Length: 507
Image 1 (tube, rainbow, N blue to C red):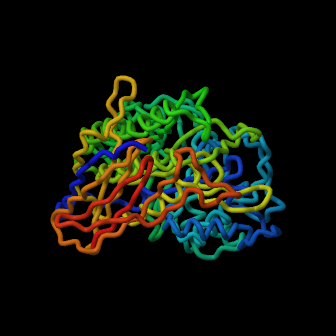
Image 2 (cartoon, rainbow, N blue to C red):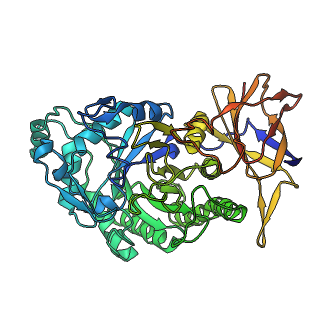
Image 3 (cartoon, one colour):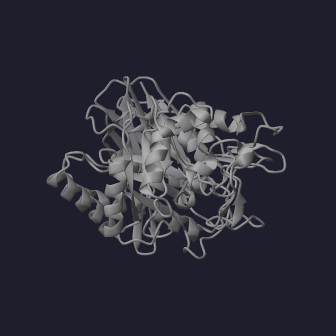
């Protein structure tokens, strides 16, 4: 390690910004690889402790994150999923082929009732993604009714026949998934018309108010976002005072290679690392371009932006099914997450939801389950979520970084290596700090303005190598530990090790 660089991080704790919605810490569980089967679901006959077939150590670990919402059943799988195949006695449920992910047979043992039981165990809100690609308006409308209506109706009676008397609360509904690609190969205008139609027939029942999410753009396709916002503008200005959908989504994945050669999750060189950090930082200008389009049509910001798929995407681990998207998770992935969260906090006035892809055993997972031993492993990314949960529903406050020496030259680009964001809640200020530099520590002078903070503590995630990861054999190779902090007249002083993430609490 070479000599440290210096940085001043100024936090204006008395200048309130937008509320950081807890739903920016959302999750995603698709019928893909071992996310559902072998991840969340082990079956009632499993030797692994479970409740109704749902794996309890996974539930316990996710509850520690204050998981706010869970998106299901896809993803691409959603647009081939017909919900009636996943209700009733399990032994009578029809089978299907999961053509999107591994071409494997799906027995539908994990369906609507199992998902809602999982949400109840997690204490989280359900985000159900409906089928537009191969489904119908009636099918999705009846699914809403089945889940959320009380009293008496055909779908209510069907639900009661399947053992559930009272309706569930299901606030979030996705109107299809990636309709520009595997969800239908549609033109933006075609999908915009469908989204308005589906939004009309997916109705609020009783006290359950739907937050409808229109399937939005791939990465920087702002024309898709504009088509959706134009559809909202035309409809609300013509005859309908109610929005057809309350959010539009966007998907963005971080890779250090190319789509055809993404690179290894663990065996990567420094150049690949820095390309990944650049790609992670690029999420901010990308989201700002979408927000600028939305602001033109919706200056009052009634429609939210939902980044409901994000995260790193690497080549699968050697020897695993390439359709299962199983990858390890190093400190590099954790830093991608921490940089993303700083961006999410800054954009929280318009960005109202984000969902990491995915929760267990797929892509940038929180948790990995070992098939041989049954062990549960918390990944480095899991720890960033846990450390950062203090920002959920807190008030974002401005942060200014002065660190002229904390830059890395990547090709023709000067890349800042210090990232930060902050929030306040109940008289406490929390500051997230990331140092993406591979070799230099950063001596941080934390200038806390707008309050009197005398008790300052911190935790840090700082393994010896950015390539370190957790496994069944070494489950705590990357884990948080206390970080020394010196209280100063203006705030605090601390040292961020290379390739590290820290959370500071000041009270």
